[in-house]
Length: 67
Image (cartoon, rainbow, N blue to C red; front, side, top):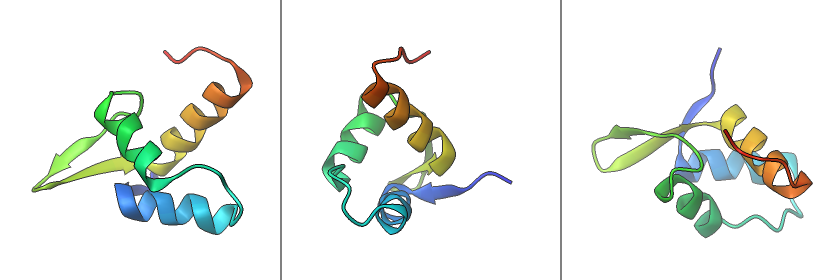
């Protein structure tokens, strides 16, 4: 099952997995805004798949390319 969350809740899940993460809520928002992480509109909010977000961050950090 996909873990679809708002940007804030997705960030909270990242932070819960790694409390010392250097990834900021602002960076997650910018990744969504720039299209690095796909999202769905829901009223005034954007919904993201937490697993996709984590994978995209992993690819960026390891120097991989994003499809």
